Length: 272
Image 1 (tube, rainbow, N blue to C red):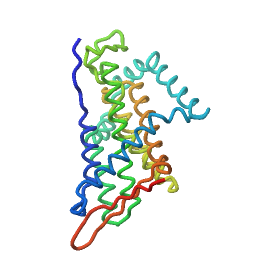
Image 2 (cartoon, one colour; image 1 turned 90 degrees about the horizontal axis):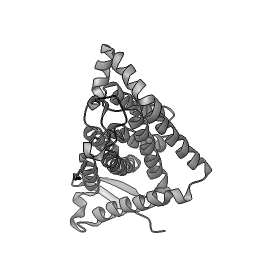
Image 3 (spheres, rainbow, N blue to C red; image 1 turned 90 degrees about the vertical axis):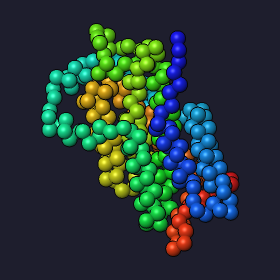
Image 4 (cartoon, helix red, strand yellow; image 1 turned 30 degrees about the vertical axis):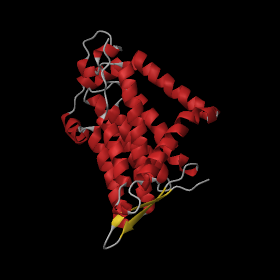
């Protein structure tokens, strides 16, 4: 059995985004200080993320158990009926409306991170730039987890399904269905945005609503099973909320520097 090396362009683009967020003309005196701090922050969050189950409470385990049970039930009972229903109930206006989301998750990740970064610089708002950085970190770890599971699971997509068994899990088949990458990226960003701007009640509704629409589009376009979307949404939401909330323990402060002569970033990582 040959195992292919599969590196997601999502992972590469997020790493590039983190580097771009760290790069600045102000690096002349200290050419790699911001880059070191950026990836140190990313690594610290990653270590904390891996260790986080040790500190979970009863509610956290109940949520994990419920999500696992729903995903398992979807695989066993709901994936095929949902796929057949959506395939036989096509709606042309809806299909055209959903086509706006029929782009690579690479573009979603790039657009969201770039948009928040640009908005932060234009408004000279460090909170917005910090949010962009958190979205990038969340997308990176979500992409890393998603691609790892895709390789290990090797599940065929519904549009490659030959039948009669919808549960084709074979690493040799080179399937890339479980989890849904588009859904993971959407919820990785939505969870960070929703938490950071939770005091504006319409933002969580809009963020999770758009992310859910992307998940539905992946099923409607016959690219993913229900369980693929559910697993991607739950895992990415957990990662995004952890990254956003962990800012208390692993704070990151990014300050835009915009003058007639220079544009860049100043980063401060407080020492406990």
